[in-house]
Amino acid sequence: MRVATWNVNSVIARTERLLRWLERYQPDVLCLQELKAVDDKFPEVEVRALGYEIAVFGQAAYNGVAILSKRPVSDVRRGLDPAIEGEDARLISADVGGTRVIGAYVPNGGEVGSDKFEYKMAWLRRLRVYLGEHHRADEPLILCGDFNCALDDRDVAKKDLHDNTVLTHPEIRAAVRDLESWGLVDTFRSQHEEGGAYSWWDYRMLGFPKNNGLRIDLLYATPPLAATLQETFMDRDERKGKKPSDHVPVMATFSDG
DNA sequence: ATGGTTGCTTAGCAA
Image (cartoon, rainbow, N blue to C red):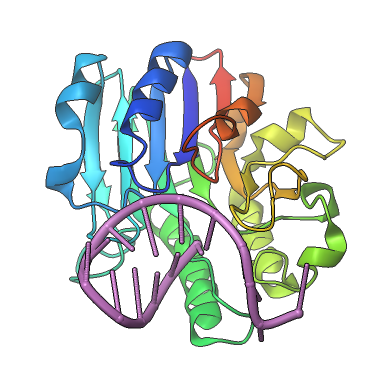
């Protein structure tokens, strides 16, 4: 099973790139973040034509997440707490062929010490509770998405430019490490210990030409699923050409199912 | 370095 995650930064602006990427890599599952569109604006017809079922949790202008799957999808859940109406569309999960797939768009956090920073911390803590309440680490589960966190220096190209920002702050890193301690394997890191591979480059300041990148898009798997991990890949080439997202797809291939 | 770029929604915000 091939699973991927991609912050597309507007599914409307990125529709052509999305379709071409699906055709090329044929993932069984793709989690999308930052749709920046309500459900009705999702390019459903085009994506279905490529053989995908779609579960969308959209929002106007900001956020928005989706799961695309070639295999049947069931038990779709939207949000960390469906009882809270009008909450940011940042989490969607579904059963796909016996694996629970959770797509997450962790808040960016604005500036360290801001209200947005506290919201990010609280959201990460809630996600940790969500895992504990709904799932078990001895069952096959994937948690992937834009975590807005570079876990250590190997995931930061220019350390001096990013020290103590919301993407590298020790409190944020500790909160994501706490998620890991529930029972999650960082699939890309498990196969690429050396670092220096990135998933996001700022549009500003010539981020990509200067390779001022960070690895903030992660694909976690629980141990029973990680034991079947075959291959991991971050599609750096997707950042090239006209109108790229500022993030690239991250993919993992498992031998099970 | 309080810049820079992109996208949504229409001038300001978020990233």
